[in-house]
Length: 220
Image (cartoon, rainbow, N blue to C red; front, side, top):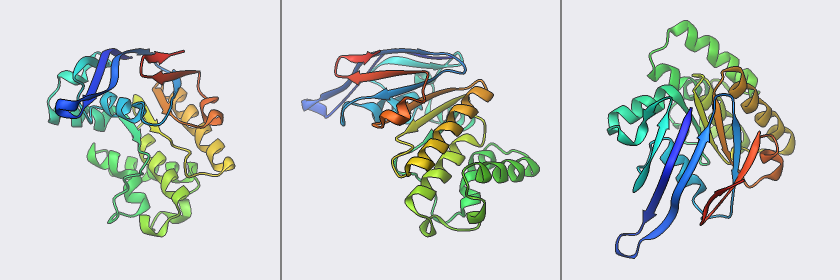
């Protein structure tokens, strides 16, 4: 379902620094993997390249037979909006929208029916224990609540690929366990695929397999 071929990325112009070099990865439907590695090794950069938020210097990303790296900005945005759910480390909740509106945003952008939006929003808020905060604004939430809202938003449109960048970083042990169980359940129920980037050994243990990212590439 997801194929990365010789994916490479450098930053810095004349004094460029290679962050990723010739990364290969194949991921099938229903498969959920964790990627670990030292800070600064390029884990978040890898997720951004897979999502089409950034472009590689070399190599390709293919999702469901569509080569994301060959698309223009508009086409990448539309594909990401319909097929990818991204849990950002920094949440990226929109401050002028309520929790419910933030969670519903992917469905709204995809022009889903109003009944579908209302039904799935209630379902996802309940699934992450945020039903009572539906009308609150992000500034009124704790870090853990914002994290759970970001996870609900990433899952609401039932994406083909879920990318999660440190999704348990702001959660206590109980909340982290609940969120990881939800991610795993939704990925498998909808025959999606998932990539979790985490420093947490406990979170990584919920995945089907764990890979380590180093300067030399991805290793089992």
